[in-house]
Image 1 (cartoon, rainbow, N blue to C red):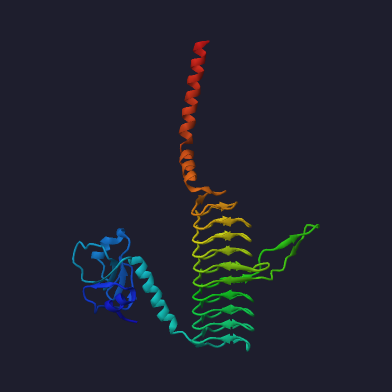
Image 2: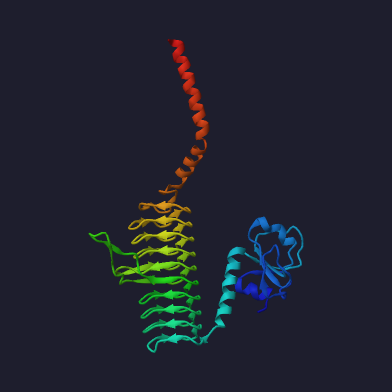
Length: 348
């Protein structure tokens, strides 16, 4: 696909500076882009490449002052990074819109209902009474269990597994290998030391505009629903246990784990490899640093915590600074002790 600078500017509400008829057919990083490619500049650290890149079209910030004339066509926007993200999203939409129809071999139960312009890749399985909305893309090897529903414009990448009764909203993207609705980790200890499985009869509800990375696992509720609320973004390799709720527009980085029945508020940010115990609440806007272990509720909105067990971020930084000075402080204390002993000896 080829696009001119003028066409791209229309897509991202930008202003062309230079030749609006210059065309591009692919994307490139500004430091290595070639003729016929589009690049962007958002980070000032890369500004020198603006004058050496061979890119034909470059998206830049509206207020950037040029140090030298450029051959490339420029598209000025208020925020180059955000505009580039918008452009990539539109490009991806155009690419996926070309996918339609049902590839064989695949299995679609007679009681399943599919909307318009649905794509079903080879070796996909769609169970009884499944509801598939319009413009849904189901890539090869995906599994959708009985009574599940997948709403409009959602994309299930290869090998995604949606267990029975789960509900996936509109404009959701779920990446390869993720499992939605596996059993929660529920086992009742018995008097003889064994464990009895507690049936997990709830489901998972993923609301609109959620994105879930590859190889994540979101467990179904014991009773009721595990809920990922609208706009949440989950990275790869995340574990969400039964009956957890993740708030609107909360982001969770890779390898984080959320234990059962914990409620996470809206607009929270959870770093990679963070661990959160069960049955607690995380307030709106909380920031949990990478590898933190959260063992109790965070009740104050917009708090930042770090460490294990996690505690106030600023206090933790002070503690770290003090700990680095401990060897020197030990030396000074030893010297002071000697001085005190000398003074006492002189008095005697």
